Image (tube, rainbow, N blue to C red; front, side, top):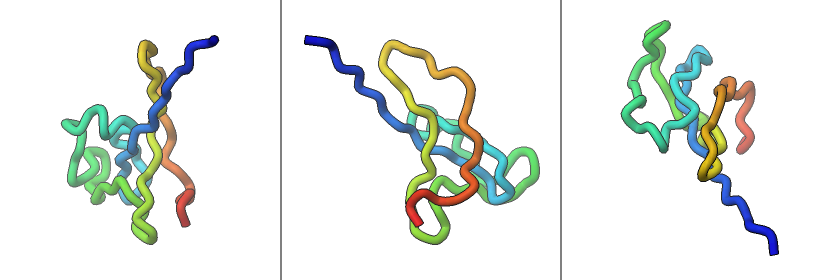
Length: 78
């Protein structure tokens, strides 16, 4: 019987202008910022219309996440 791998999806924090602050917000809550350090725009981790969480990096126990996700162009919940 094969082992199963349990992957989890983190949450993303972006600014209103599309700059990714972090795609690992749940794993690294210390990276939460009220404003973008590049442009000063307010940040969000949920869709402004429906409240759906912005999907971030996928993590698998025992593996290191490499790279980062780009800011979504549209909400997957709307």
